[in-house]
Image 1: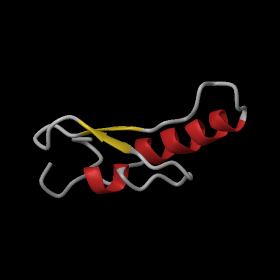
Image 2: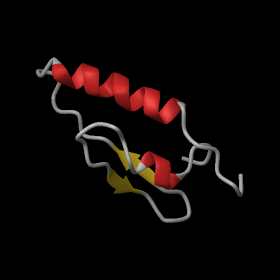
Image 3: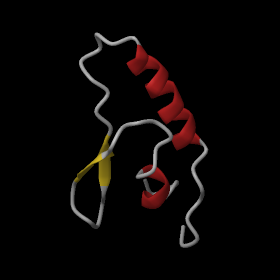
Length: 61
């Protein structure tokens, strides 16, 4: 989160709504992908991981 920014992390390119965790001083997000029984979750995970790897650096970081 620190490297890519909260705004970018909150907007994944998949139909998953991240769940906020932790205090506002150290925010974290949980992306619920299911229980592993749906093969399409792996595709969503790959898209999500690519999105998070290519995060936009924060202006203040």
